[in-house]
Length: 237
Image 1 (spheres, rainbow, N blue to C red):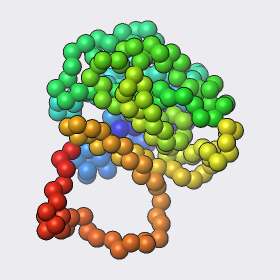
Image 2: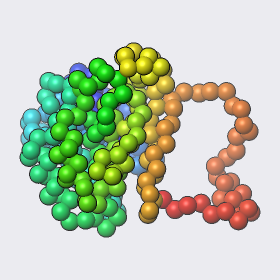
Image 3: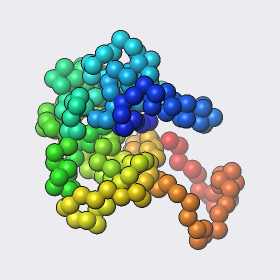
Image 4: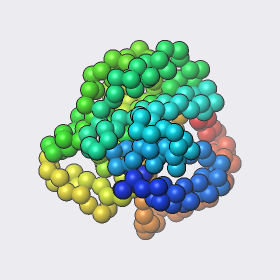
């Protein structure tokens, strides 16, 4: 899943190139690609190229996907031409309508603007507004986790008791050692591995890059046999 800002200029050409790079790799993995738009994306170009919907125009790009018994809801939090996030009243109604009936394995909500307090003062100008209204919709729903991004740093928290997992960035990240100030840096990029289990959801930061080996590596193919020999069973996800 890609949670927004898939292009810097929102051009058709950039989305075509992204699909060319990502989809063959996903096919090799047997993975399904789900695209969510962010504040740098152009809704019409995004929808026409990545969602194969040339009729979407400038309307919010809310989506619902079924992954077995799990329901994945993609909520458009973007404001065209702005960096901050908001949820249009119609989008909030759409979300409430989707959540009116629980899914067999619960729901996961994906959005670009993470519904979390900012940790850098200037970031308040591009945070998600109206978080209290979102919390009211999520309260007592079957949403098990919120997946987001936007801030160019990993973040974890809760909204209405639901865990929020905000992924770091693939382009540049924020130097949090700068304190409450802002300093973008070319380093510490990564992605998040999200695992859904029957009773919990985990999110693990996966840094990009190649680093020196300090512990002997082993082939994952022999993990099951080695664990079985020790009487340990791999958890089902």
